[in-house]
Image (cartoon, rainbow, N blue to C red; front, top):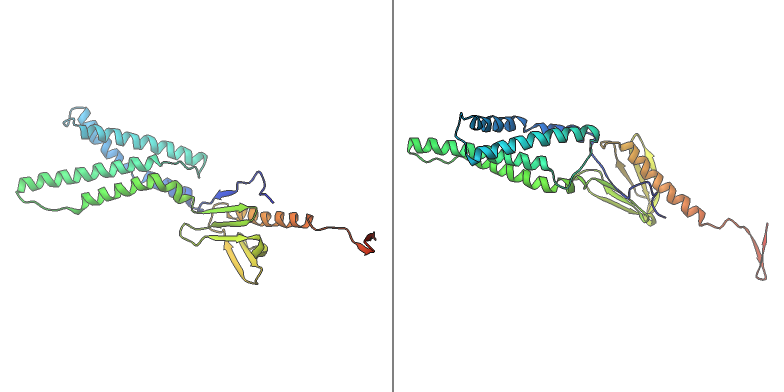
Amino acid sequence: MNAPATTPERITLYDHRHARRQRGKALSHIVPALVLLTTALGAITGAEKLTAVTVLEFVVGAAYLILLVRELRQLRRHAHHQERVAWLELAAAGILALEGYHILHRHHEADVARGVHTFHVLPYLYFGLALVFVVLAFNLYRINQRRHLHLHAEGFGGRVGLLSRAFQYRWADVDRVEARGAADVLVHHTNGQQELISFARLHNGPAYRDQLVAHFRQRQSGEEKKIPKRRGNSLNGRFFSY
């Protein structure tokens, strides 16, 4: 039996605070972006010397603000939109790398003035964070897809938390599936064991729980249709119905 045509076979699940976290993450670098823009504008107006770095600061700061507005508008229209590449994370990586460069450059000038060389951890911490953001930019899509519900003809599977254990059930091993509480489902195994799966901390968790239960009931309905409804006795190879 196939899953309903209107239902995606593999559904990406989201934490109930996903949209709020996305907005907070998007706004987390707005102050550094404004600092970069202010520094770059000072160079453009002649207050400071115009260099390739200040031009880069202007480009990165402006790009981040533009991407931030775009991200917030998309979150307002569709809180769970996903892109293959998180461009906002790349812009954040640029901000962190430039801030690390500025800190390193200022410390270097101070060391030259004192005539003493010192090692400073903070710039390299910023560089490390920038690298983390680059990695996230190309992997957030796959990370978010770890939490999912997979409905298919042979059974169902999924994962309700990014770090939680994945589950996989085949109809041959499942006796029944029943709803429990507001957003939980209890899976009864054919060997008598039971396992509770909770969708309570997920966005639209009760709806996905109901979708899973409906998937099982549709399978049951399909199995019942395969059972012959004719009843009777046979005598000498002949069938007599009653």
